Length: 147
Image 1 (tube, rainbow, N blue to C red):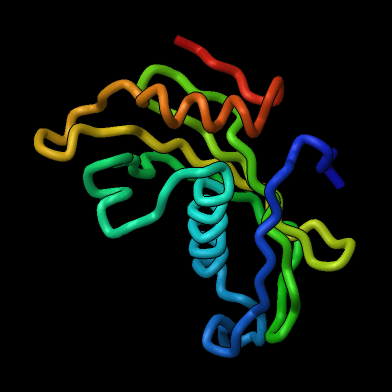
Image 2 (cartoon, rainbow, N blue to C red; image 1 turned 30 degrees about the horizontal axis):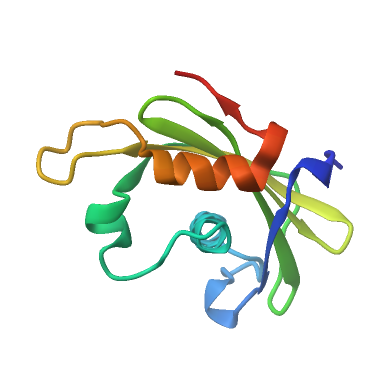
């Protein structure tokens, strides 16, 4: 399994009955929801205040690219761990990396690029210093700033 030492954030979940498909395994689309929940939980845990305006006007970041590789499946009632980190921040974009495991099994490796946008125009804008500082404080030398 990949080196998990760079991942300081872990989101723990359990596969719900509504998340399994006709084969009895977690539907591949559900993993994308788990990744989103983990990203939100990560941002909350580093100190970003969550409220109805957080992603609408205060930190309007949106996913523009996702990659996911599936290695094994999860079944109903399996507990899973989503390891999350931000690996880089550019001017207006940042990259989340994730690993999902269940017990000692590697289920998924994924990454998502999110872009900070002006909520009125939809154009990309620089990620503010508040978010940059929170990520740097949490990730330390595990994040690369590329401006």
